[in-house]
Length: 209
Image 1 (tube, rainbow, N blue to C red):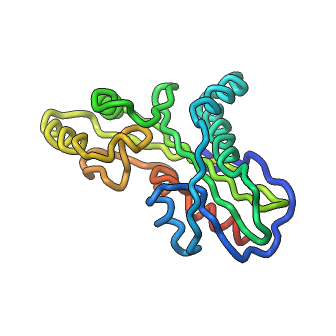
Image 2: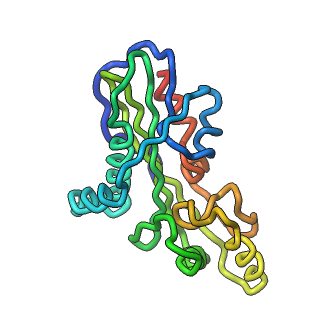
């Protein structure tokens, strides 16, 4: 399986003097700490954009339909006035399970339903990234495959404890891979940072190549 897909690359990079991360995610900020980026969160209607592009790309295979939609959300986040010699980095992450998108859960019951559905199955996490300057854009998406173990009763209390975390509602698919009990995950294929929220190795390569 290929884990990296190009969406658009156009223009030419100017010399980069500053980096701005268009995200309020502390996980993404930590992953990009080697760039020492400024942080600037942008607010867009992600679900409206998602609905529009999922319909536009409806003839594509579902996982790539989601990947391209994810790219359009990242691009929308970078639709701002830009400064010279500045690289703007925006990203979006979606969890896909049984041809459904698992966004941030609306409540604890929904989070529990999402989380329990992973056991004994494989799901995918897609993260899109838009690297943008005044006259340059490089947008792509990466896919990671996650397989959970088969459920067994001894995991019930561990799952319940995890779902009590206050920040579970702020995570697509109702989990953060870095927070999970190691007994849950059987296998990961692809870059684990795609699951955390930013495929750092690919981002770094595309910035410096």
